Amino acid sequence: MQEEVKLIVDGRRLDGRLPDELRPIKIEAGVLKNADGSCYLEMGKNKVMAAVYGPRKVQPKHLADPTQAIVRYRYNMAPFSVEERKRPGPDRRSVEISKVSREALESIIMKELFPRSSIDIFVEVLQADAGSRTACLNAASVALVDAGIPMKGIITSVAVAKVEGVLVLDPMKEEDNYGEADIPFAFFIRNGKIESIALLQMDGRVSKEELLQAVELAKKGAMEIYKLQREAIMKKYKVEEVEE
Amino acid sequence: MRSIVLPGDLLATNPKVAGHGTYVENGKVYAKFLGLLDKTETSVRVIPLRGKYIPSVGDVVVGVVKEVTVNGWVVEINSPYMAFLPIQENPEMKPNKKPNDVLDIGDIIVAKIINIDPKMKATLTMKDKMCRPIRFGRIVAINPARVPRVIGKKGSMIKLFKNELGVNVIVGQNGLIWLNGDRRKVNIVEEAIYIIEQEAHTEGLTDRIAEFIKKRKGELENAGGS
Image (cartoon, rainbow over all chains, first blue to last red):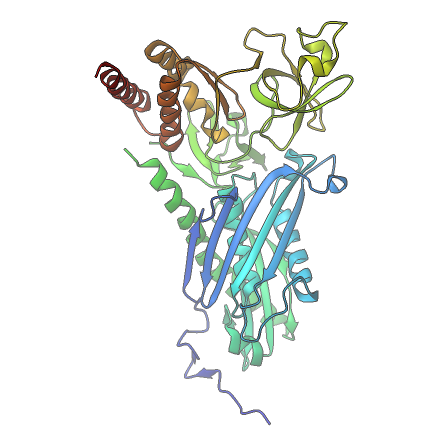
């Protein structure tokens, strides 16, 4: 019999956050020399690294699409990223995450500009807490901007969980494991406004009203993350500009 | 000071002014990629800061021959796309010669893009006074987004290298640059090009490069005299 864990005490969560508070986020753009664009991102205890290559020649050749670029996204967890060693290589979970994340990003990348080429996105999870797919999407989005890839806007991702009947933003591991539901979102943001939802998954169950509330909560969190993503890119390129 | 824009930033509400690096949706003009905003009364464009070279008709490029076929040469142009130089477009090609006698794998050429089809297959020509096979000199590679800076306003930077150091420079739009001249002077130009790449988009770049060249030329002459 497992011991009952109290996840919310006096309206505060285990790490002292309010229900609508994000974990601390650190974003750094352009950290890898060999990649065309890259980003290192920390979201609470999540540590992820994203690298973008392209547009480049498609390898192997037969995958090339003569009308548009192909987008490839690889989500991968390092063997040391979790408490117990994770068996290296793709598994059911990471293949699924790669697919949904790729589809979210494909919706904003202007693929038709680069026929017969590929845009390859690699994201490595170095340390995993909950919501690593959202952290990876945020990192990939910054890396794509850093690579100068034409896009309609920026993708920003955040999760909402239901814990002991309360909706909480950006759940951490304990909340994800013992909560009632986990709903990762990704939004397409253009000119500082949320235009559409690019990804929505759900694990667990919530009522219709709660889902609508969750969307509003996630939108609020996403806007905060969007500002940090912007800042990270501005920081890298401002330094290059003001060398006088 | 030009401001930095990110993809999706709203630049204008009049679709008529939309220029390079922008896209229009519902009558509004948005930025397409990361770059510097260049906004005037009549046009809005985004100057890219990053990105690969994408071939465009009329560009002069420096490329490496990767494959020889019966009809011509397949040329790598530092881009996601290969280019093709048909034998008819190479004036050195004579009926009694085979394609690999004229250009072989690994040879470097300066060529001009004359056509691009919707599948991004680029066709090259060497029937232009700039175009030539390269058998000597040095090739320097830079970020293709910085190429306009290395050329300078109306070729001012290239003229500077030619007049001050006697180094011939051909800048390929794809970010490969051919340098030819005295070896020590070519060294100076190479360094100068790296400075331009680093400090592109800052004010008074041409003046600073002129100063740099003067300084390095002085050092060279002193070393030669002693």
